[in-house]
Length: 290
Length: 157
Image (cartoon, rainbow over all chains, first blue to last red; front, side, top):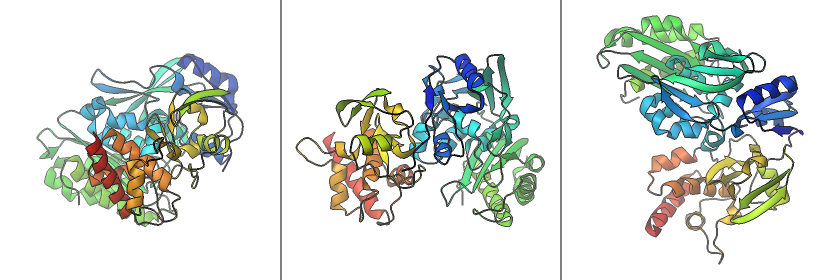
């Protein structure tokens, strides 16, 4: 068995204290919010923290509420509690559904949404969907708090734009409205997904026309990426949009920095985007996917 | 540090190192070698144990996390008289293993599903079990065994 190097676990009483600990221990400290990614990286000595700050012991940081038309998900909410939350299922079913597909049940029991976003593992599901749902995160530190759109949080593979001492405390996701359609699908044959694709559309007339769209792809590239040009061709009548799905798929592939790796070639990944854009379009419209 | 928890129904206090995984503590300190360690990356499911009835990968889960909680391993499933849990019996009846290495994890993962809802569909069983890998059986005997145990557990209620 691979043994972890020695570390000390700290139990902050508050987010403020956690932030102070981060500042105190600097590069020697990491936030411990579930450990599904962190402990794995530490086992392989990719990370060598001597201090782990256990965010899970902070009371209330795993709560899930609706406020001002948005879901507010505490950073230490486990994937499984989000997947099964009646509040999430009711107010943003696409998010609950995506969470039900994260990794496996054991990872969902221990892994948290906040931890997932902070770790920014490229082959991960949530950030791709949060990009199209318009998710934001709250970062708190001793000097204040700020809201960061998920798009601005992402800085690269395993990288994000937190300032020193900032702690992710909350994920905010606008609630779905009757005119919204959203879906997430992934393709997976290995331990982690090869592709993840999220789509959000606004339709005032139950799927006959689409007035705006957001689409993002993940796993095929170093970090989840919006297809901003593709979104422009995903509006119009359903017939027009369906006809332009191949064009949109190419624009998504152009926007993403597709990676040639053991999951497949760049050409293969472009092909997958074509297939899965068509499927996720159907899925978002709650139609059979084939 | 000292941690207090319930291990297979018995109150237990252990001195552990904070860096120790639950698999290391259960296998090394408690001699519960039914906890199998294989991939060490939370992918294969062979180290599955239940913490407060929920499945976790003991290989990548700190023992520190079980303080004040209930831990169930395969050694804790049979009753005091040695009578097997319906899932264990169903795995035997359906020959749902060959080498047996994945079996403790399979049975505990299935237990977490059936404890919550024994009225499960095949699709629900497959979705729940898709993180537990078996190289021997081709999975169908495992599905049959879980189905059989589900039927029996429904009858007990």
